[in-house]
Image (tube, rainbow, N blue to C red; front, side):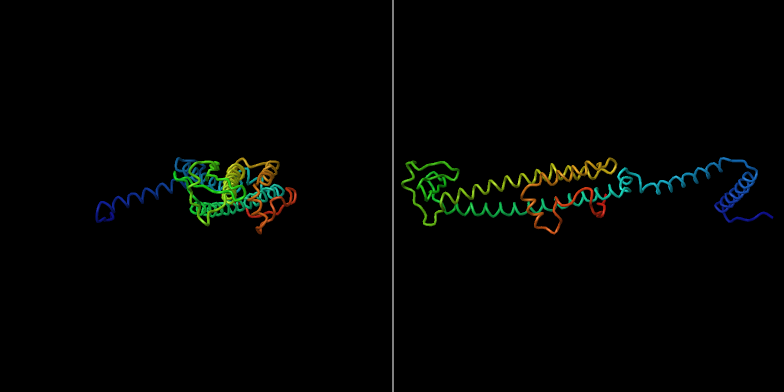
Length: 252
């Protein structure tokens, strides 16, 4: 007696299930006889693909040249120590920039206050008198002692001395130079070092690691070095590439 199905969908499903069972019996018979069918090849390819992906996962730990080099304890120590020194230098540089920028702002405020208290020529130019020589200078350093309008200038009681103003100007220019030097060091030396150290497929050699450490130390501006000396980090010049501790590997 034929089975009854309530609709076409159930009929199609039953037919598909029957076909699948027939194919499974056929595959088993072929396998027992040593025959390989198209379906067998597909299953075999799938199995091989899974094996390949599993092997790739196992090999992933050593997929870069750096990963291989770090298996050498001497190289690992040198590599990690170089990262330590680079990180210390970057922190010292950031602290130096912060302090210089703060000093520049403070000095700019002081210069503005001195200019507010200074005398002015009729044309609006700020002028200062040198208390030692009695000569008169504009804020830009132009000697206007013999200017015809100087005689009529009303000098404020608290007018700053030209030498004090000039000293503050000189310090401002010095801070600008220090700021530029530290920025250049951060970009040219530390930035280049970080780029080189971050190349996992073509990592620096032992000689390059030593060279990077040397550049970090020898080119460091005095302001950054001063921050390093007052920090809890070890001196950038302490230790050698042959005797180094192994810190954590920086993240990718």
